[in-house]
Length: 395
Image (cartoon, rainbow, N blue to C red):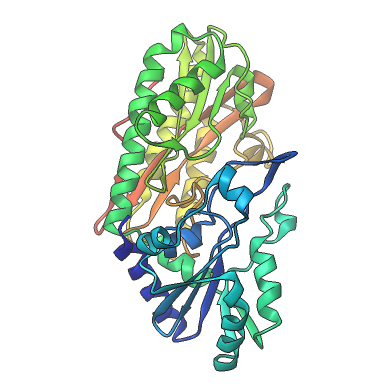
């Protein structure tokens, strides 16, 4: 992405907040073990506005100007890990100026004298997750509350902007999805030669990295009964002939994510396994056909649930009301973009430029069968485009 991309994003956001300052922070590094950090991954809103992929930076948007605040990096850290040079950060982001931590405190105090309110990213509710949140946003909020009368959450405005993908973003998504498609085709052709799940994962990793991409998320390669665990990613079990193999994998290219799932047969499978696969495939295609601009999200979700319900009935899996979520326990769609689960801005209707997944699945623990099929869909002016539709969803 060019600096103009980030500058235009900042201009749109400034227009949405009508002159109020916006201050965001990058994520900080997180401990992996002892003196090692996990591989760093940037806070996506910060990247969307700056393009900076280094930790502990901050950005201030005020009166049409962008100021980056550079972190204080110790000499030891620079020797071992390096650091983002100030001139490089300015080139990437197109920022107007960069200041250091030494002058940042006074800069923020002076800003607070001009503005009583400030916008920032509020951290998500920690109780919604079974893991610890990156502490950087909460630390920034505590600092802002000491200076500003009111601190407001900028996420709703940013999420509405991010929901509508620009041409450059769609181009990156196409590249990520096309790379994922090519890797899936190779893995499917070689699947009968693999003895373990990790061999498929390794092939995906090789194909992504040789093209300058990474995994968008921890890949799922789940053979047989492992497929009934939705986010199974141990990927270390043996592969057995006659099992289905569910693979949920996506490349990240240029900052944008693919998210594709296919379930393939490892050798000859049973009529029941084929029937489940066919039911999921027909449901996916029927749900994709619903998508168009102007469709109410609520109607889409209701119709999608009905399509999956019919699929479950065709397999004689709906004996009581609770069986629906027993065999289909997850959402049918989510946004896709910089994040695998990208915000859609809580829209009432679908709009051109939105990108979302369609991923029905049926999971039958008592039969050790799990099938999920997932495509990535762009809402167009008149209908939709299945960006991953050129990858076969056959067994």
